[in-house]
Image 1 (cartoon, rainbow, N blue to C red):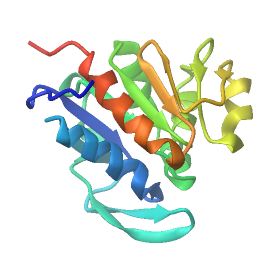
Image 2 (image 1 turned 60 degrees about the vertical axis):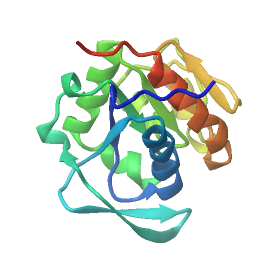
Image 3 (image 1 turned 180 degrees about the vertical axis):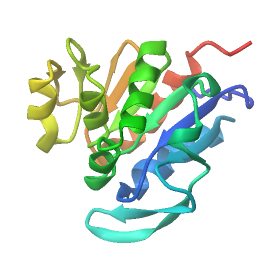
Image 4 (image 1 turned 90 degrees about the horizontal axis):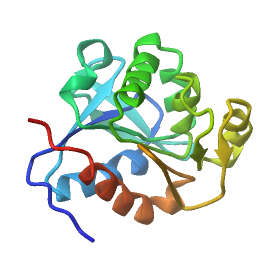
Amino acid sequence: MTHHLGGTKKIAILATDGVERVELEEPRGALLGAGVTTEVVSLHPGEIQTRQFDTVAGTVPVDRLVADVSVDEYDGLLLPGGTTNPDRLRMSREAVNLVGSFVASGKPVAAICHGPWLLVEADVVRGRRLACWPSIRTDLRNAGAEVVNEEVVVDGQLLTSRSPADLPAFCRAVVEHFARAPVPG
């Protein structure tokens, strides 16, 4: 089912240098196509450096700083991967607190590839069923998650996928997932 949300939703995309370009751009494009407003939230102003696997792949403008946003401003959170992106973000107490606040609020959160590392750092995976990139499966298990090897996994408010290969299914699921969130007001 395709949703057009007519500008009623606003999603934060938490990313920094090292983000996997397609994991940011493809879900963002799907959300924009459904009428969702998105904002790239990052650790520093200006632009963030993207990657395609281990190759530099351009930049993406930053809309807002982590230090300047609140969960109350958004209807959901998207966590793209890339190896260094979530690793850098999990070193920021503000970024980790933002992720934890989204989960505590009950708002939908979607993460792909290495993105679930931020869920581990925010200590919100215990007892949850999640998918992720193979190299971080042990981290998720050690944090109490049940890790499954599936294209898209929805466990309550959390939606996760394994890799860029899952992007077609992930993008469809992200739009559906955020569409189910209550409209503010």
